[in-house]
Length: 344
Ligand SMILES: NC(=O)c1ccc[n+]([C@@H]2O[C@H](COP(=O)([O-])OP(=O)(O)OC[C@H]3O[C@@H](n4cnc5c(N)ncnc54)[C@H](OP(=O)(O)O)[C@@H]3O)[C@@H](O)[C@H]2O)c1
Image 1 (cartoon, helix red, strand yellow):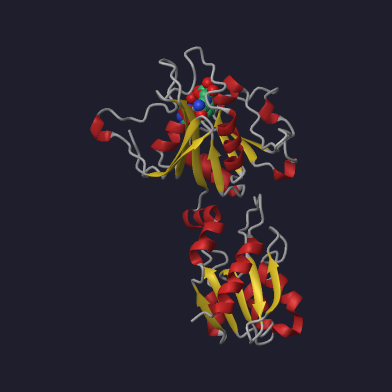
Image 2: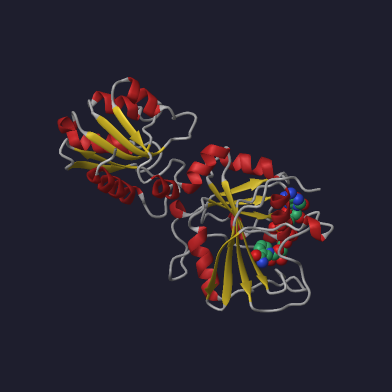
């Protein structure tokens, strides 16, 4: 049974782990060392790939006082020796008596830490504030469990589902509040993906900006990715130095996603256009949809999504509605994933 002190420590560990704008390949992790009376001895969090893990930081701060302590940590201690020493080894070297963690580590290279600690005689308990810890690393956990990044498909359309006018012009369907909202949600992703068609038509920049509309530094930008076989024109804005850009010269969504996974992508923000969106839906590679619908009509022009192989109403693709809210003059719908079945 976990104690009130351990629960409070887990809340603190989650808070220190929640580094804003995190885009590292590693998860966010926080740890607190408690003395046998439940008093806090030290707190630490992971600062990114190649730096000490949360348990290592907290144990170092606690020093010799860590002997006989309880370590409360947001994720199962890892059992791997790579760029940083295995946390299981650090915990055993420090002679901690008890470890309380929130969620299992699904990373095949690092999991199994709890079993190693138990076998060495440490009292280990899991599941404390697991829902909160899962939310903290939602995309990372998904990527580890599915061996691919989470994909959010975002689009904007008119009330009649048009993503551009008949002459191809598409700026701006939605208002400034919706566009600012997109910036906030985009910032949760590590990769922004578009097709060559969108680059050709719109020449988008795909960078995060601050409140004064200035681009954030390159180190805080998600990578940009362009998918398709047509070479991207040399003067395209996505090729500038504001952020990293990956050119995925393929039309295979599964290949694109696996190449992005190999680069460390955990959350891909798919911004279209319609042809690319339909390819991802058909491949069962859309995990969430964020749709901005403007109370406006065009009557003609391309749809927000291309052909899906739906020939009759029995084949309609229904998405679970998760959230609806007004953003400025527009409406934002958040919908769950589209079932992964190949469509002809
Ligand atoms: N309203 C919105 O939210 C929104 C968002 C984005 C774009 N748009 C609009 O959409 C328009 C562009 O539409 P689009 O559909 O041409 O753009 P797109 O989906 O960005 O690009 C389509 C191109 O991507 C390549 N591609 C990559 N993977 C593919 C696959 N699996 N299957 C087929 N093609 C693949 C193909 O070009 P290759 O020949 O190079 O392989 C294809 O022509 C623009 O007018 C833009 O403004 C609207």
